Amino acid sequence: MCGIVTLFNYGPKLNQIKQNDLDKITDYMQLRGPDGRGTWISDDKTIGLGHRRLSIIGLGLQGYQPMLISDSCQTKKTLAITFNGEIYNFRKLKADLEQRGHKLKSATDTEVLLHLYEEYGIEMLSQLRGMFAFAIWDGYRETLHIVRDPYGIKPLYLSDDGNTIKVASQTKALIEGGSIPHDVDDGALAGFFLFGNVPEPRTVWKNIKSLPAGSVLSISKNGSKTLANYSSVSNVISDSLLTETPDDEKTVSQAFIDSVESHLVADVEVGVFLSSGIDSTALLALAGNMGQHLRTFTLGFEEFENTVMNEVPLASDIANKYGSSEHHIKTVSKSDFISWLPKILSDMDQPSIDGLNTWMVAKAAADFNLKVALSGIGGDELLGGYSTFNSVPKLVKTLSGLGLHDRFGTIFRKLTYPLLESYNPKVSGILEYSGSVPRAWLLKRSVFMPWELPDILGKERAINALDELNYEEILTSNSRNISQNPVATVASLEATLYMRNQLLRDADWAGMGHSLEIRVPLVDIDLLKSIAPFLTKYWKPPQGKIALANSPKSPLPDYITNRPKTGFSVPMQQWASALNDFDSWKRLPKLSNPRCSWARRWAYAVADKFELL
View 1 (tube, rainbow, N blue to C red):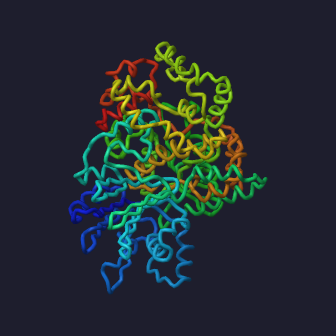
View 2: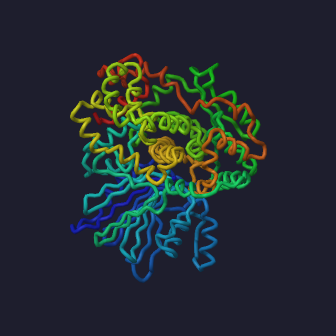
View 3: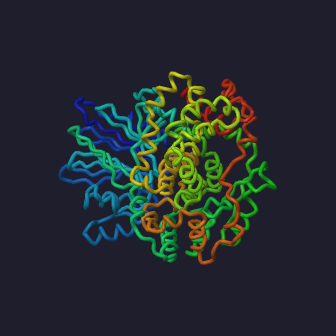
């Protein structure tokens, strides 16, 4: 896991890449890569690459980046790469390349990527299994390729003024590099208040965008640009609906085994974030079946003691049952949280209402010198673990047939909102938003609904921000090919709007704040393709989670599989009252209501700390 930088002058102005500009952005990301640093600028100074390295695969100088393959006769003929992530099948790819005559000098996945490109060009992307974001400079064709993995596990941000494109793993790094205006993107701000995260490709800064997941942006020195999508989670889900479902549990179990095994590839120790839920427990058990006895890390909170929210007792039992080599429990107090909060906000690259739990457990693991940890993120999205898989289709089926959303929905909302605002403001939209699965999903998932934003941002700013955001298009674009299947639509929205923009992004900044790589074996495009034919069956709770629970040689016990879902939570409701520096929400009557949830108040406080209001 690393931090990458690319500066490329492709426009008509004869600007040269400056070493100082490259250094500023690269050095800002020191926590992403404390084990090494490198930069490279081409002889004509039109392209520069920077890298901060967290050494996981191919230790020592063999993994130094940026990495180059150069023609000794012509210095312009250079292939160069700066790479963030892991290619889990790199050893097989390396063997195939060597059979084709390539001479690889290291045991790194970075070198494999360079030689794969040399052999296949950008079409190599279909061969990769992993999480990645990288930039490859092709000096032969004078073209830059910027790439992001299919799920969008690894972030990549761009600022392009039409003459020079700047690329980095963090928006704050690009801002630190200077010369990028700090103008707030009000559409992104509206998205944050609706979704609890900033929906890509937006960021909170107007002049910085996210490279879409599963995309490659190619820019030539002559100024031509091509943005192409090479892999889509929604398309894989859509294709699965056309496949008959065989009754073959062995195939599904083997897919889980293969994914976990691939995610254990490392030259350093790998650990596990262990809750008392099915997903992380199954990861530990499957790793144990492979002879990998991993250290485990669990969070505890004084406020959750003697309640169903307490993960500690069951996690300890599971750690013992499935052979954790060493189980660590970190009990977090209110005073811990308050003392950590400034760094949490500093590490948070884009505003989010979540990620606190991940940051805390990542800190616990890093405190014991761990550099890699497995997380159960993705199990709920893949296997129908959220209540939305049932409640959203049921809501639409029940109410959409009445046709009230078209005729009376808006009227009902406007009449009832003033009455329900202090009790449950979302209820007023139940008719208006029951006409389609994407809109009903937003009603269930949102922090605020669109009609509430004037109370938060002011009427004029809210109207303009919602126009810029176009949330309807965001919802439909992530479910367009599967709208005929309500549950599949929910699955796509959960994976692309909730997991990608919130859980995965949070895992990146929260882990990197401690120089810790977080791997997600249940977020894997090869796994998704393998079990896609079974998804229509496994989206019916609890069948998907049972399939995962039965995959280890010793299936998970009933006291885990039958336990009510609690989520990986922190006691923010109890802590929020002590956050005197995060009480800007008190200036709004809507948020000062005693019934207001902490999530709404926290969203406003985070936006205020990012200076977006």
